[in-house]
Image (cartoon, rainbow over all chains, first blue to last red):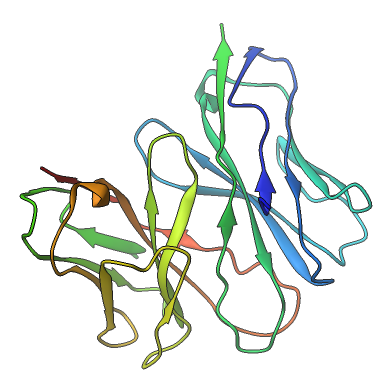
Length: 118
Length: 116
């Protein structure tokens, strides 16, 4: 089974509007972290936001917020007031386990290509 | 700080040739990772190193070897390149510790490898 599922291969949004990018995950580990990364056409991976499984509140970072619904195993990224520079591929990723001293491998979804229209 | 650097940026190999991708980080991170990204897919973990002196296989290790040369450097070697290894390769690093702290991974700019 896929650990991270992003069901929207492509999304379009009008400039200045909000957009939600979907991410569902699958884990039996009670301790995990969820990440969103942005990959513009230049290719680099840019960290956007993190949500821990024990966090009580949804994470926010500027125009980015994470709609974390633990029971539904979803971690959707919300981008408010979209800008042309937000056009990029967006990846959801999960890190399982919090064993002390462990490495922090990430499992990635297949991504959503967001296009912001002027 | 340069962050995570990778060399080369681009490489074309013939089937059967070997090469080493270099990665270095200056953030004093303990853990380092190698991923590959194929068109239409997310990143898949090839190998990782939790700390200096240790390496472990990830999701897609076949055809690759790694060396954690020191705390800063983590190299990826293709002994006999195959067309199926045509991909973009990313190196990443992160802190290693306890507790539910984000410890996001920092990525290098990537190496675009074509095997003909």
